[in-house]
Length: 401
Ligand SMILES: C[S@@+](CC[C@H](N)C(=O)[O-])C[C@H]1O[C@@H](n2cnc3c(N)ncnc32)[C@H](O)[C@@H]1O
Image (tube, rainbow, N blue to C red; front, side, top):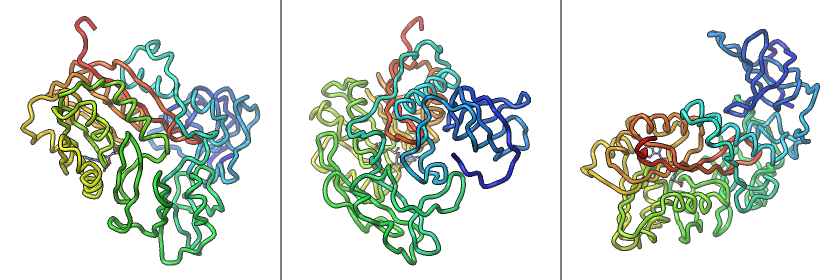
């Protein structure tokens, strides 16, 4: 159960469908209420936490379950409901995946303009290394409280929840015993448990302090501990396989990897494109680009560009390419970037999305530019949370569609 930090009114609510962001939808006196900590079909008492001035909806936290869902379970973590790290610990893992699939389908329909029945069979796939949705997080940023103890932030709050153990932290991070130590003078601690080498903890991390090594897509990656890398141990391989499967790259083709990070997808594309191919990888974070340079120095077909994607697309003299991989941050790619990509007339775009709403909006933009959604897969890279990762294939709309 959640422990709301304000004292808004208590409402008795019949809980309806799941919505984006981990909420479920209910109605009170005709007004929509987005409820956290509840499941479809439940009856709950919920405390209002937000009543925006526009009056279009309320937000509330379930504080008592009157009629529980058969999919409600005892949260494995004792901090569930207080700690903001996991919002779905109280949901059976198989049901978490069904709910995430429903959210993806809804975003595709409502924002992406897809026919509701087209993606009815979409499932959220577990990834290799999944063990009941626990012990998967290989990167964690802990907050430090004023006593020098580690914790995680409460939901929608700066309050630090002191913890002994985080059950979604990987065994490597758990084994560091960070919560038993005092962290005076630090405001946060980054813990990283890479697939190669020892786990590390960095108080108030800055680029240049430590490098980590990861094995993925058949290569070894060496990069700064602060640079972006997927947090689930099964994620990098799963996503790069999905991207290659969907794009079906051919020898000699020219691909562009946008929001490239340390170059995961550029590296994965290098082999199928072969020595006659070319990959331009675009990334704005200097530290990540340095990691890509270090990791892909032996691949002459990869060309790295330290730049913002929108600016690079505007300024590149390139007129055509064959393939695009697009893996933007949560806000999505948006109109300028989608237009810049479409101008290059690729035969296919693989869109890797950590927010299905942003994906839905960008699909709608792609459609307005004469493209269509041809395939989509969804992966459970963030068990125990409402988050879900999708890989979508966009192609020029076929005549008549
Ligand atoms: C979701 S990560 C993907 C990284 C990489 N594709 C991977 O899977 O490891 C998004 C990346 O986009 C970068 N980024 C964010 N905004 C950007 C922008 N406007 N232009 C270029 N890169 C950007 C971030 O630094 C981050 O490395």
